[in-house]
Length: 126
Image (cartoon, rainbow, N blue to C red; front, side, top):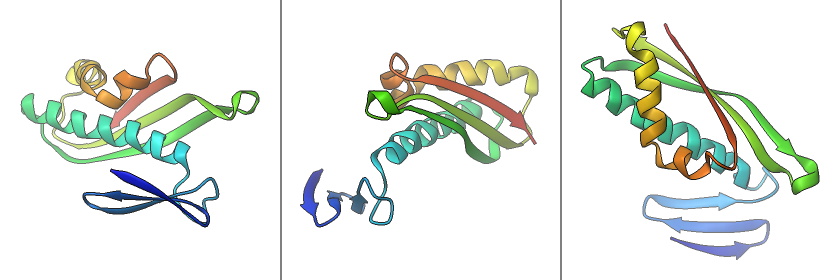
């Protein structure tokens, strides 16, 4: 991974392609958006694997970021993120608390940030 300065931010060169990052969202993804996206997608990927191992494969998982709280007085630090998972498939609702527990325990991004950000995770089976 390598990041090079450009006129409006930075361009990252990653194995899959280029990533434009800027404090101005007209020119690229804002750093906090990438942080929140990493939390959401890492959790979703782990949840998918957990459901498969429990023999309840999801037909679809959608993740809605319901809230992002930033503290302006602390350099706009992200202090809270609420992720809401919407699952479709033959999923046993009684097993979802364990699915949520295993997802949180095994998501590297959540584990990295859990002491710095209040991460709220909710779900519904559709």
